[in-house]
Amino acid sequence: MNAERTGDTANLDPTARLALGELLLSMADDEFVIGFSDSEWTGIAPLLEEDVAMSSLAQDEIGHAKALYELLAGLLDDGHDADAIAYDREPPDYRHCRLLDHPRGDWADTIARRFLYDTADAVRLEAVASASWAPLAELVGKIRREERYHVMHVGAWLERLALAGGEARVRLEDALERLAPDAATVFAPLRDEAALVAGGILAAPMNDLEARWRTMIGPTFERLRLTPPPPATEPERGRLDHTAAFEWLHSEFTSVRRLDPAATW
View 1 (cartoon, one colour):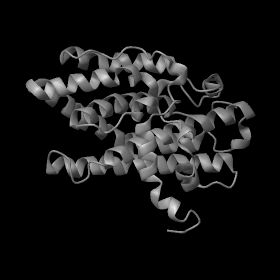
View 2 (tube, one colour):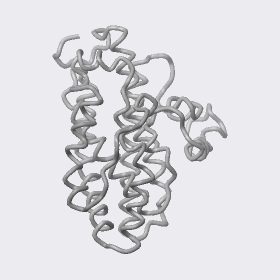
View 3 (cartoon, helix red, strand yellow):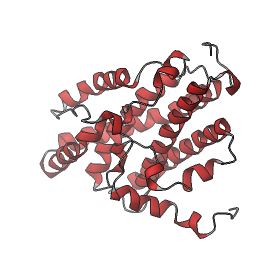
């Protein structure tokens, strides 16, 4: 496959096709899981403005997931639509990063998790913004316009909690410490990602993207006197071994679907 943008999957060799499917699934599952997790703040956020804002962010993420699942369904062409991919798998089959396996927790947990995820996702989106596969590049262009505001929003909250001192800062520091072992799992290596890089779909390997992310967040952590996250201890398992917290969330977001999987809503 050459570097010219194309939407023709026939130009993808089998290895690149499988690798692209894994990339799409990991991105979609990330957006889907964080979207549903943060939607739990609807009605209970600490401020009315944040009730609205968090609901809007969650809706954005689920919309991004839907669009990515649709690309994946078209790529696989195996009779499964976006809803089937999203809802009809068992928990071990999801490929979201372990950072998003942590329970919702309190507001500091949510801000810490979202800051780590949104900044990492921004680096990943930049790496596929010029993808040689046109459908992905076009979709990412739209997603990035929304995600830019997500990063601004959570960055303001991270600073607010860090500079508040007292219990607010302590809770933020505790949350970052709990999330630290899984913070970099957005960049868990993908199977055959070398084919994505060679094919012009991914700008660089995941370990290079992780380095870019650390450079990006480093000044913020230094300015706020926060401890930056360490490297993942088992990066190759960063999208596996999901927790009981995710199993509970999975039971919630599949509950309506399970009532009648064949129904048209």
